[in-house]
Every structure is written in C-alpha cells, then in structure tokens.
Length: 576
Image (tube, rainbow, N blue to C red; front, side, top):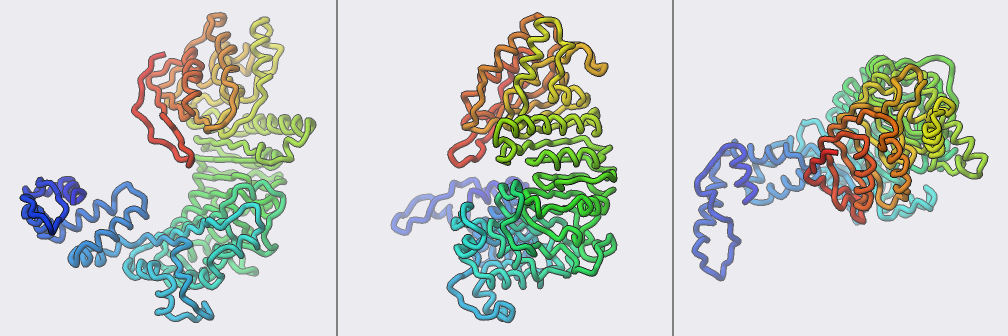
C-alpha cells in the first residue's frame, strides 16, 4: 500500500486520505486507526481504472529487472478481483517469457513430445503457457536460462546431460510453443551450460520466419571452450535455427524475408554451419568462445562480414577469429565499436592484416593469452608469446585509425615491465634515443583523441604506461609528454585477490614526478577506481603525481564473496 501511495504521488494524483499510515489488520484488537486503514484501502480501490492502470504502468516501466517487474505485477494481480482484471487484461504486462529449469513440471508424464495436446502442455509448463496466453498478440521477449546446479565443468557433455533434470522431450514441447508464437517473438536469449536442450529448444524454428525478431542471443556458458583446439560436441552439432538448408544459398533477400527487423546476433560458445548463416544487414555481431575447429574460416567470416558491410556498427570477436587469415581486405565502413579478445596470437595478428575499420571510435582489446596454457608452457613459448603480442599491437598501430579513437578499453593487458625499466634508465643517462619505446606507450601516444580510458585487471607495465613520457624522437610526437594528455574518464578496475606488486609503481613514478623532467600534467576530469580497499591509497599516490584530477570516484567494499559489485559510493572530490 505504501508503494501505491508513492506511485499515486508520482503520477500526480493526490487523494487526501492517502497520508494516513498503513496498519496491519488485527482481528483481536480494536485499534483506533483500523477504521481509517479500511477507509484508505477503499479509497485506493475507488480510484478510476485509468489511474490504477497508470500506477501499474509505472511499475511496468520502472528500471527494475524484467523478471522483478513481472513478479511484482503477478503479486498485484492476486490482491483483489479488480486488480486482477486490470492487470490480466493488459497484455503488455506479460510479454516477458522467462523460462528456467524449474519451469517444467517433471511430475507430469508424456509419451511423444510431438503429439502432446494443448491441455497436457499446460500441465507440463503451466506458467509459460499462462504467460503466452496473457500476452495476447503483443510482441514477446523470450529468455531461457538453464544454468543448473547439476552442471560440473569437469564432466563431459554426455555426463552433464545425464545429470540435467530435463529430457529431450521437455525442450521439444517448449520448442513447439515457440514455433506457434514465432510471428511475435521480438527477442530470444538462451543461456545453458548443456548443449542438448539448447539444440532441441530451437529445432522447430528452422525455416520459420520471425517478422518482428530484433535480437537473437544464444550462449553455451563456459568460456574455457573458446581456448580449446577442438569441440567436445559431435561433429554435426549446430544451432540450426539461424541457418538455411544445404543447397540454398544465404542472401540479403532471404534475410529480409525471414528476419526483416533482426539487428543483433550474439553467439557465444555455439557452433554453426557458418556458410549457411542467414542474417544480413546486422547492426551488432557478437561471436565469442568458439573452439578453434568450430570457428568460421576466413572465407566464411568474410562472407558474413561483407553481408553486413555497411550496416554493422558493433563487432565483438572474443576467442572466435579464424586461426588463419586471407589476403583480401574486408572493409566495414560504418563500424564504430570493435571488441577483440584473443588467446591464439596468429588469429589476432591475421585479423589486423585483413580488417579495415575507417570509422572506428571505440576499441576494446582483451588479452586472453594467459587462459591458453600453450602460450606459457616453457621459457621458449613465453618469449614467442611476448614477441607475437608485440607484433599484434604494432600491426594494429600501423593499420587501424587509432588517432580518431575516443574510447579505449584494455582487459587483462600483459606487457614486459623491463621495457619501462630500460626506458627510465635511459632517461637517467640522457640516452633515451637508444632504447625502443614500449609498445603500449606507442599505442597510447597514437590515440590522440582519446577521452575515455578503461583499464580492467591491468598488470604493472600497463599502469606504468600512464606515467611514462615519450622519448625525444618518436615519430614527430612532442618531446617528453604523457600519453593521453587529456581525459574525461580514467577508469581502473582490479579484481579482488589479484596479486599486483603495487610498490613497484612508486619508484619510477617518483622519478618522473621528481622535477628531473619538466612535464605538463595530464588533465583528467574523473578518475574511477573499482579496486580492493588496500589498493586505493597506493593508486591515489601513483596517479596524483602526474594527473590534475577534478573528481575521484571509488567504491568501498567493492565485492563480496559472491563476486557482485557493491554500489558506487558518493564521489570524493580530490585536487591533486
């Protein structure tokens, strides 16, 4: 009732009796305010239907999660007959179809899932069936989350499938329901660690047009699969729903016929017959964590990218790029955002040689090399990995338009600290021309338009790049300047438990900030530190010497045992 009071005031309706405090009903006690309590309840129920619906719409349009909003509306529908009638007759309240492992009644038996009648389907998936009925003809958003407590990443797919409570028939029954509603499916989001139910869930959608579909997202949730040379699935495993049958060639016309409004395709850990993939004219394409033998070849990726050549604005390739590149250039004319993650260096280097991104303004690089054990098996492989990593960045500097980048994100960057030590020693000897410039410093110096810089789980070398100046003869850059001379936001995030020898930051920082070189300070509007509490003071001291900062944002008790982020605390204003 208090919540309803708030919503009444929010929409501008002010019944005077709503100011009376709410009291629980006590049949054994004559409380002096009980009469007013029932007057208050009667007043709320006496509001016109359109006012009550405005209150319910305010809940439906709130910033809470979809499932929370639907749970609240479900509770509202159970308060009284009138509220139930108002909510159940408003079909837009029930368009979020959320399916989990518990959505299926495992006690209800059935024989052939392809012939189960409607009444029996209702008994097997009662709430899903109810939502589809209540949503009427509205476009629906389907979210299927099959993450299970029974999953064990140490077991094989077959063993995990045996432990999963659903049988194939349950997924087939749900697939039949989705096919019947295909004309009004707006978004699909499927998440599962086990492959088989995902495959059966969408098998009925093969060749079925979805005229209002906007986003298709399927995730087999185990990132480690993307760093394997081969898949643990059968050879013919594929997510067939987005593919055309063999013998039919995908085309822009077919894509328009099947999915005219589709703009986002997200496939994570999901094998495909890439040459048969239908969607064209996408705005967002996200491919992640695909085993090497299941990734698209260069020719297949080329066909996919050229099919979205002028429409694509965001491309993510995390452990998904072909291991071997080609010689033909692929130009994505309107691509604004590129996120590249790699654990095999050859695939990353090849991508920089054939991909052209003339409109790029937002670049994210995720160094996943530490997740691939073959990169650091012995001393020789470590040296090889470091050389290949440097080659990747040098190719990127030479070929991509870094001077127009406005936002840069580096995830888990890994560079040689010795490069920075050598440069400091060379400056001390006034022989900086004799030492190669560290590759990350070179990258940052090329990002002349950068105003937002995110460092996620940085190593010491990456942090030191923030306080290392350019040598005298670097490609016509001004002498002795800091990279990224002016930033709107510098964001540093360090995971709890990550071992960083932060004491190594202060000695070289003292050298640059000790007056031995006349340096203009970097102007930073806001520094945001999402770091464990013990790192804050060291990072403040580290950043405070060479940065002029107006605002410092930080979080206290940033993460608990569950790994969830804490709320951002009120900002502190610190003038360095």
